[in-house]
Length: 241
Image (cartoon, rainbow, N blue to C red; front, side, top):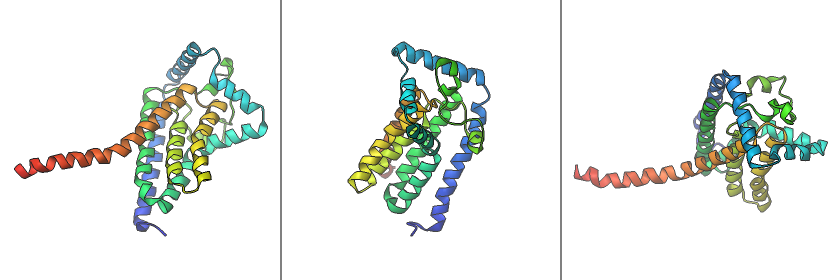
């Protein structure tokens, strides 16, 4: 059942867990300056208000608040669209579309590494930490294991937005049925709505996450070609030496 045996499978698991614990380590660095995180949050809010009369995040919140089912679905998506959805997708691609696994894994890891750098360079308090600005916390951040492990100032860029785009792009191109392709093509937009509606990310965070995902997908796709071209150009030089 395993494409390359148990040793290779557990090696991939170790890579994923290694990244996760690295994330927790960097989280401690990003959490050390709450004042800076809140200042950056105010800057994002002021920037968006300078561009638009009405904040998109608050409009999304009003839509979600109109239905208890919609709000519950948005909160559930927020908590599960990261490690749960990514872990299951990595497993499915590894077992069923193994030829696409390496690029998918590398794109996810690259996007998250860029995100970690962003969290250290620009820690940003999310919208739900600014109730005086009209934001309402759409999920429970106060208690539980998820609250203990989460980075409260990891708003910029939105890795929820980045990872959803990578997952959606990979599954939309690797699934065979049309309905599955359509479903996963819509997945990124749904996640983007959910992170805005639950006041966990700003619109600017989502746009930055999209840019991170596009860069990661492009880098992973073009790097093997670039390496192959460099090797091809190096062969004549090696023959002359």
